[in-house]
Amino acid sequence: MGEHWEKYDNWDAAEEAWDQRAIHLQKTQPIKQLVSIPELPAIRPKTKKNLRWKALNYLAKYDEENFFIRYFFSNPLKHGYNLLRSYLTPLPFNRDKDFFFYGLKDEDEFKTILAKPDSLLIIGFSYCHKPFECPSKRFTQDCIHDLNNPVCGQCFIGKCVHSLPAKRVLPVFITTVHQIGEVIVRQVQKHPKLEVTFLITACEMTLQMFGDWGNMMRVRGVGIRLGGQICNTMKAFVASEHGVKPGMAVVLGETKKRVLDLIRFRREQ
Ligand code: SF4
Image (cartoon, rainbow, N blue to C red):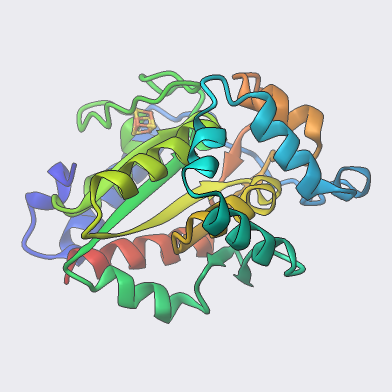
């Protein structure tokens, strides 16, 4: 983590060097990119119907070791109350463009958590925006972010990981909602004295489906909406959760900058 950024005295110099190298690699060893960003509906109208119920059903159906059921029943009154409160809101988040805030009003409030010395940031990247040529493969929980690899040098995930501070940040490479949910629960249990927060990339449908469970845990954080070839039906979502994702999702231009600005903010605390 932070290997590239550590070589430079300040953020601007590190980013400039990263970007120049990426431009050079795009000319000499280009990776596959979306030629244009398709304008797809975030969630198909038929899929929107009873989406919260579908999310609950999906979580329970694939909860192989009953992890979430056991977590819920570890404190059923509190978790039931929190879940019900979340269900009573029209949406489980506050939205500002591609940023979805859970338990938070806005970006400024998120920054107050990032500024706390006793906070732990889980930063999660959906495998759906790994490059097709990713040396760690797409549907895996790995990312070698190799400084000498030309694919990593053109990858937004690689750039983020190399810019992360060394302490109190946990990068996660997400394959399924169960995986990231379990990581968050375990980190909360492991660090009772830290405020665990998250910054996670996902399709809008996923951000909408599982926000209630984040609210149930009372973990505050931000979801970053992906664009490009996203999942917007249950069928596509279930397939992608099982590694079938022929398309490429992307973090969109302005949103990339917002994500990097937050990493910078955290790094400079
Ligand atoms: S930085 Fe990570 S996700 Fe990106 S190409 Fe390299 S190994 Fe894959």
